[in-house]
Length: 251
Ligand SMILES: C[S@@+](CC[C@H](N)C(=O)[O-])C[C@H]1O[C@@H](n2cnc3c(N)ncnc32)[C@H](O)[C@@H]1O
Image (cartoon, rainbow, N blue to C red; front, side, top):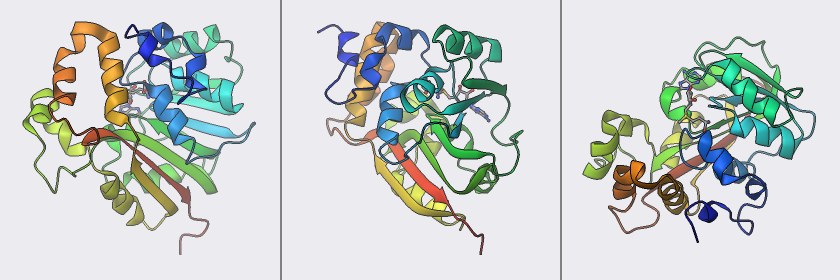
């Protein structure tokens, strides 16, 4: 099996397997975003026609997936990637009429109160979501009872409880402080008092998924592969899946 073929797993990820790995790798900004999204959708259920914010959408692969596989209206929102680049991706995928591209900062959202039915975010919360003020600000744009779900790189043993392994610090330095455990995220969201039904867990097989992605890149990812292989335990690192519902009343 070639590294690219190892990114096709119709048994485990039937929806993601509809997408060409070469297309996805060409939009790369981190480990397999569609596998993360497909797993997140077991915690966040979307209904066709809903208005969904794809927060930190990168080059737009997840926005294409949401429009095509879930039939939702997507707002693809990102800070680092030029809107024209994202628009070209969604147009080429034939979903330009169902995806609106907006440039901006998640910490200052240019949206109305309660305008989204759901918010999803793949591999982006580590850049802005650890601030205690962030979630309440994000939930402002979600309707009461709406769902929020995110994935983010995670260490099973929280970096504030157990010093991160050298292999992690060597690769990402202080950024490892944001690679919180699922339990940390559940507490962090719970303390806001504005979210109900919080679920947080490691993605099953997350380290293996990450390794497959890195190997598909070849030698450019050698340091990342070394980090992932530095501990034989398959679950020590991966992605946290975190989801909740916006509380209907603040009190
Ligand atoms: C690791 S990339 C992941 C992109 C995409 N979700 C994916 O999985 O391919 C993180 C993304 O978060 C976005 N991001 C970082 N800080 C942000 C902020 N303050 N507001 C909005 N987006 C942000 C970046 O622009 C980047 O596209």
